[in-house]
Length: 240
Image (cartoon, rainbow, N blue to C red; front, side, top):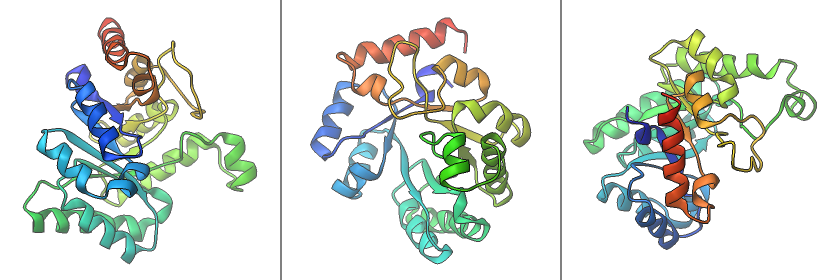
């Protein structure tokens, strides 16, 4: 893939008008993420808008519910023709398998290519301390992320979402065909914000990431176009 095709930019804005303004400001971006805030605000309309502009879509709603409910929601989500859909690995094996089957059913009924279903391993805002003390999970964070990824792979999913700090281990264990999408990617010249487990774009790709989710360093920049170009130049210079 070309460098620019490996960067997913989140549309973390409250209205469709704001989203369209950002898309028009950054026409060179081919892959956009639609998350909870924008989808709750606009519903599927924003997906239709992005499709009409030939953009790829990462529908990041992080489904997490009982198997029947998850399957119904993903069956409908798959009918929108999006490229990636997220579900929490902690929904469990039965829900993951039901979601995978539902994604195929929904896309087939709509006559569109099936989306790639990817599992959330552990949110990049969480730390090892959060896992141990707040969530009471007595497993080291890298091992927990790996177990969630393996559960997703065994359940037939296409990949997982992980921080770049776990990407190398997941790539080594899960193989080259398992898709790794990494948020928590921050250029060295940007602030980390609420992301706790970060790497630079070049480090993340070298660690094994297929796609990088980079939001605020681009969208909150004084000049988003310049920020986008700077990241692309740095990746090219790093030879990734």
